[in-house]
Amino acid sequence: MSELLINDISVWFDDRQRGRVLAVDSVSAAISDGEFVCVVGPSGCGKSTLLNVVGGLVHANTGEVLVDGQPITGPGPDRGMVFQSYTLYPWLSVRANIEFGLKLAKLPAAARRRVSNRLIELVRLEGFADTYPKALSGGMRQRVAIARALANNPRVLLMDEPFGALDAQTRALMQELLLDVWSRDGRTVVFVTHDIDEAIFLADRVLIMSHRPGRIRLELPVPLPRPRGYALLATSEFGELKRQVLDVIHEESVLALEHTAAGTPAGD
Image 1 (cartoon, rainbow, N blue to C red):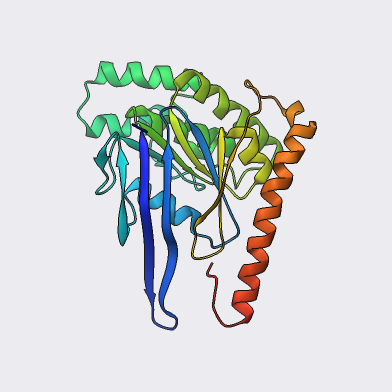
Image 2: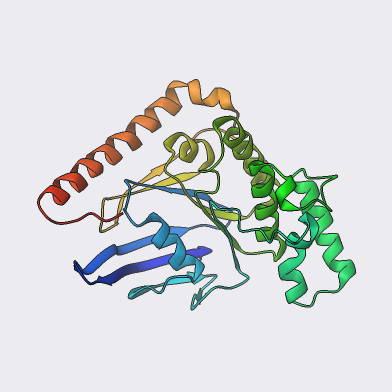
C-alpha cells in the first residue's frame, strides 16, 4: 500500500461576490513510502489548498486522504509541516523550538535532548542550540523549522514553498541540505513550489496541476541520478524535463488568463 493516498479530493469555498469557487477538483495521487514528490502549477491552481488538506488544516468537501490506510480527519503527528514563513517561537531557543512538540507529548527531558541533539546535527546547527531565532539567518531559521517538523517522527513531511523567501544562493544551499537530510532520513516528502528548477532538482516525481479548478494535469517522473549536485542543472536531460514542465504550466496559465478575461476568475 502506498504510504500516502489522495483519493478524489475536491475543495470549494463560498464567496459572497463569486458564489461557490471550486479550488481543487477530483484530485487523486498515490505517493509511495520514501518518495520525494513536488507539486507545481500556475498561480491560484490549488497547490497549497491540496497540501493543507493532506495536513488536515483544510477540510475536503469530497474524497479522502489516507496515511498508511488510516483516513486523515485533522492535523496529526504523522504529518510534519514546514511553511514559507518560519513559524518559530521567538521566545524559545533553537533547542526549545525543536523540542516543543515533544514536550507537549510529555517525553522525558533526557529523551527530548537526544532527539534534539540528533536533529541539530542533521540540519547542521551545531553550536546554535541555545540561540534565539532573531539571531539566525533566514536559512538557519528554516533549518530549525525542518528539524522541529521532524522531531515527532512524522510519516510524511509536507512543505509549502519553504525556501520561497530566501535569496537564490541560500535557497540553493537549502535544497542541497534538504536532499542530504532526506537521503539519510528516508522520509516521504510532498513539496509545493513555484520554482520549476527546484521541483526537478529535488523530486522523484513532479505533479503538474492545471489552472483553477486544480486537477493533476501531468505526473512527470524525474529519472535523474542521485545524489544530485548543481552541475545537473546544466545537462540536456534536466533541460528537457524543464521544457516539459514549462510547456504545461504556460498552457495552463494562458487558459487561466482567458477564463479571467471571459469573466470566470481563476482565483489567487
